[in-house]
Image 1 (cartoon, rainbow, N blue to C red):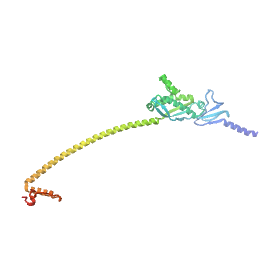
Image 2 (tube, helix red, strand yellow):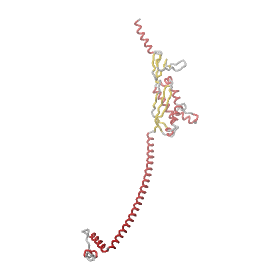
Image 3 (cartoon, helix red, strand yellow):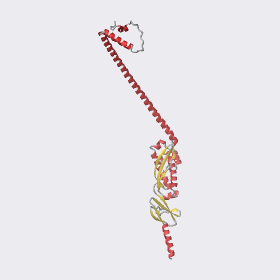
Image 4 (cartoon, one colour):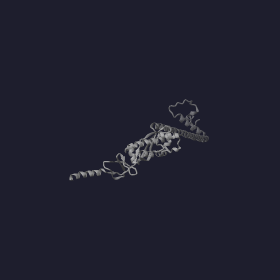
Length: 317
């Protein structure tokens, strides 16, 4: 009897342990029994909150999933605007599981698979929206409206049949919206959608930069030409002012020199009339000094001329 008691205890403990499972904080679990998710009396999936729970050992299988908000940081994708120009949009989506049973049936509980499907839905919705806008509208006031249309869908009442058909071809869920489509197909709730960055392809960026450089160079050339014109005007005005000042100064100098010469002549005349003999003697001495100052000079003059009269006679007679 004692020999059977120990194995029985071990079996009971093993059965008890296999019937228990724990759900961690931030997780939710459901039980699969005979290949189907366990449901309650209202035919709803039984969802287990964090804590200790029990199941049928060796029959039930527990599936545990992360119930927290997930981030799908989408890779940048290329879209075509209504102008037939390419733009590269980098976005991200915040989402969480709303219906765990539907999520499991749609993806097998594979989060990577869920994000791939969600990425396709997002890309289709953005493509349908971007295809009807210009680049200016995308990067300015229409961007928030684009995100809202992607999340909540488009109201078809204001569209023509042709526009509706085009929208549906680009995205079958265009009128449903990403939120409703993701909830219906994957059992997940899209919490938020944001665009991180909107870029142009490298070749378009280069052409834009070239055009911007050409525009800046044109503006710079205009400013340089304007500056050169102003500089020439300032230089011309300064030259005119200098010429005017110089002319006035030369005129004043000539007037002063003329007045000085007249005063000097008057003084000389007065001095000459006071003593004629002395003045003639002084002028002769000055002439001798100027003539004989350079020893290399040679004068050929008649000795009887008046030039030498004061050399012959101190009285000059």
